[in-house]
Length: 194
Image 1 (cartoon, rainbow, N blue to C red):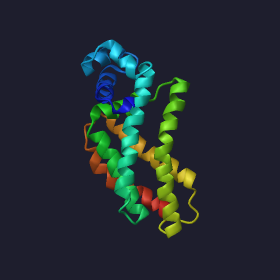
Image 2 (spheres, rainbow, N blue to C red):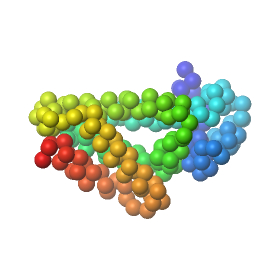
Image 3 (cartoon, rainbow, N blue to C red):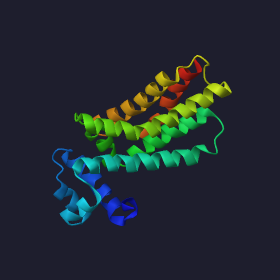
Image 4 (tube, helix red, strand yellow):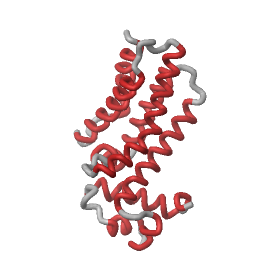
């Protein structure tokens, strides 16, 4: 499988840097190849085009985030604790890789409808994880029985997403990781219905 070949990851990591520094539209495949230290043609052995690189990059990073979260949550009992872990991990990932933060918060928001649909497809796995936490919290009585899971999921994802976007737009001048507890506190108050 292509994804297990070393050059695949090399190209994805190079694409994160090139897209973050040049913007998606100015990020030519040749620049990505140069950054990855491969010939232009090599890219096409792994990806159909630049759009495919962008989607694959998101799938790869999101996939490993979901995998990590599932493993970390396995040992946790409470839904509130799982949510805290999700917010902390989300913020840690993006604060630890400023290029990736620029790509996910700005460059993935392309106006191209087909691209947006493919991105939403990748996001589904992450949103399902939020639903799982919310449903567990409702069942255990940690969260309000009146909780609208769909609305709560949108609020949680939207809050995390907007917090990271603001940080990126402010040139990452402050500590994003320092915000995970206040964000969690705010969301938990709403989920408990208190």
